[in-house]
Length: 276
Image 1 (cartoon, rainbow, N blue to C red):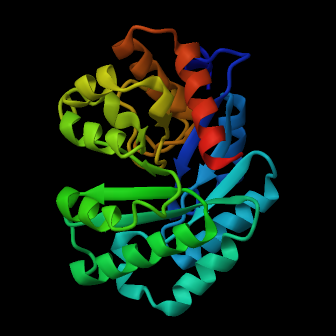
Image 2: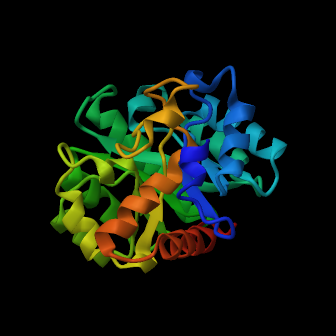
């Protein structure tokens, strides 16, 4: 991992707020992935729950690494077709665990429509109600559903805890809308994709550091600036939490600030937001 550690400050830690460690891509080496992340100064890390089943798995993994791994519990809009009242009861029980720090990943995805939109909305509303009840922050997902997503969320605005829109790839105006609501934004390796996500440069330039968090969304959203030598021993398209410093490095470059400043501020934000 020499290429990763070459941009890592030995006395600065990074916090990855979104890892899909229960993905089948990590079935055979999850422990090694965690150790590589720790070696790259990435800790703590938060495992993303996208269904009741993998929310359970994430909570179990977090218990194996106290103080290093935490988890969210939620139902992704893709999985909303499996949602029922028992699902919310199960999430509620998981969220009683200290290591389960957030409700989500939840929201709307009208891009792929893997679940009917009506069910996505019902599932999202139920999780907003759950967050308002248990007072743990929200880990939000929105894709191609900005207007409807905000309409639903605004109905709960007075009773909701903090929220972060994770893996943000929207426009500057959308970012401003979320910031005006008091939300945080989570940024991934998309910030280094100058072709598909070139518009994120102006978003990052505008963003106040006090409202920014960083994540890998591993095994997805591989940063474009990862040294190819780092990828040779591993799957060339599989992202890992050890690559989070590359996300931070891109943000530091765009904002013309020190990499350490990005690491320190985003870690401070994450620890405060998730009460780590």
